[in-house]
Length: 116
Image (cartoon, rainbow, N blue to C red; front, side, top):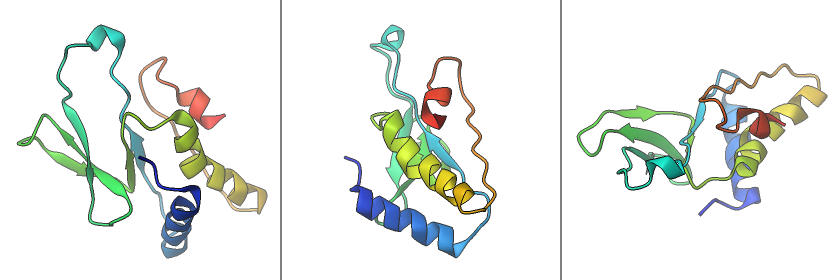
């Protein structure tokens, strides 16, 4: 379940105040219908910060784990990702700050939808 808007906004603001450096967020895409019956090989795990998930593990329990500033589970909606990561950057731009959002992924995975 996604954290409340107020809780997440506080988390984002805290991270934003701590650093103005590049932040990396990742969203694990939901499995496609053609992939049904396959086992999930990517997990989003709880990181060290109690109110943020930020670790992605590939290939099961023995697979490598990668840490990000924020990692969204496959059940997370595109709207939620936008509200948490893109909307605050748009607001900062309107206040005169520079910001960039780069979306990378497979064709049809929702990159443009998330950014708009």
